[in-house]
Image (cartoon, rainbow, N blue to C red; front, side, top):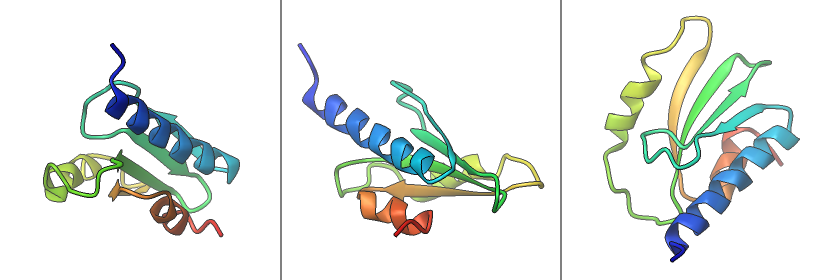
Length: 98
């Protein structure tokens, strides 16, 4: 039996990655990871790495602080940040997409 919540979430993650790629960013989706990061978006021009936890539900299950620790593990060369995205408008704002 197909899990409708999984399908809805996966569609949202793909939508985020497509939007990022269409606007010149490198985007990778961690399919079925059930981990702390659903997608990774790299902006090579701004030298930024965005860790994305994408959820279609509005209520947060875990604290953002727990996820932010993942961003702190990366390089000095890139500015890293973690973002909890619940709406496609948030990713557009984050990546400065009109």
